[in-house]
Amino acid sequence: MAKFLVVFFLLILAAGAPVLSPPAAPLSAQGQASDAATDILTLTCVLRARNADRAKDELIALAEANQGYLLKMSERRIEVYLSRRLTAPGVLNRLSEMGQLQSRSLGKQDVAEQLRDLNTAIRVREEHLAKLQKMVEGSDVSEALELEQEVNRVITEIERNRGQLNYYRERVALMHLSVNFVQTAGTVPGSGGGVPIPWVRSLNIEDFLERF
Amino acid sequence: MGSMLKQLNDTPARRAGRTSFALLLLPALLAAAHCKTYTMEAPEDFVVFDRADDFKAISADGVRIIAREIPNRPRGDLDLWTRAILLQLDGQGYQIAKNEAIRTATGREGRLIESTYLLRNVKYSYWTAIFVKEDVILLVESVAPAEDLAKRESSLRKALRDIKL
Image (cartoon, rainbow over all chains, first blue to last red; front, top):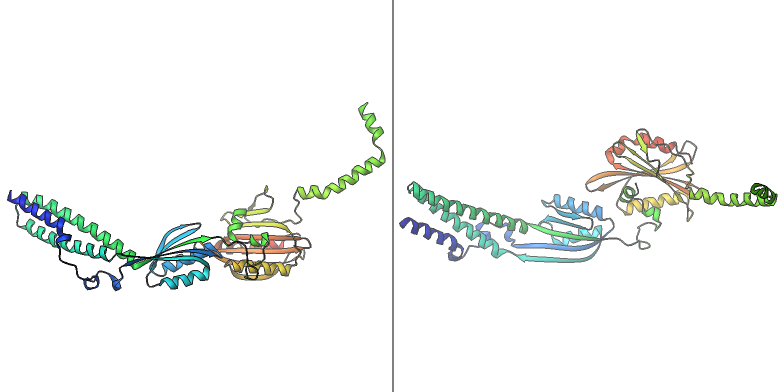
């Protein structure tokens, strides 16, 4: 009965830990978030590119040169993660070099609360785990087996929380850029785009491969 | 009986009329048959798609060639069309590697524009050769990843020199 009460008490502690825990210290003080950034940045644009394939290649190169990566790509759309060292105005400038920006929107989602809660949950569960492990050391075999199950459950919870925390940290550290491409319709006289004659217009690799 | 009647009706005037009609029809028939005004041999190690309207050839490593004739309308000379091509390629972001005069064995002047382009992180070479013969333009294009096309450079140049236009 006493063993049961001990385990029950520990379970209550583990489940209620985030609620009962004292207010968390600021993230910067905990050394968990870089540069105190706690918002997820999402930049969405519509680009009338002179050459969508080239623009995509440039965006992939830009992402890879800045600790980012390609998330998704289709004929008319690309999504990349870019380092937050690149600012939204800077990225918009680069895009405007690739064509005409038709629309842009910048979204921010503050995840400070989620980060704080996850950090607290991890800390409390780690303390709880340490106590459990001490109890395992001083218990007999049958008690140890029961406690081991609880230890495993707490470890799983901690790992899950760490995964969530890493996900948020990565999202905070990188800017999500989504670009939708629209076709360039014809050429404006004097824009330097060449003559509007079909066979001249057809001179490019994509058209060549289609004709082949 | 029928053949006798046919012979009676076949006067010299009617024969002349039929000949004139056939002569009038000839250009249209030739156009319909899409007769090429040039001949081009495939470079060494290329196979030709003999059922294609245009000249199309490919090598085992995927270097592709298309030659096609285009009416020279509105009429322009070699210099004008070369500038139009350069502008078009540049406008699409192609890097012009070479723009040089070429000449076929029969003395026809042309231009060869060698450009490169990064497509899905692969550097491609895109060659465009142009010849202008009065009301016909002959375009010869070749595409492949840059290193593959470089291996075929001499045989491609020879094929261009051997064009008869």
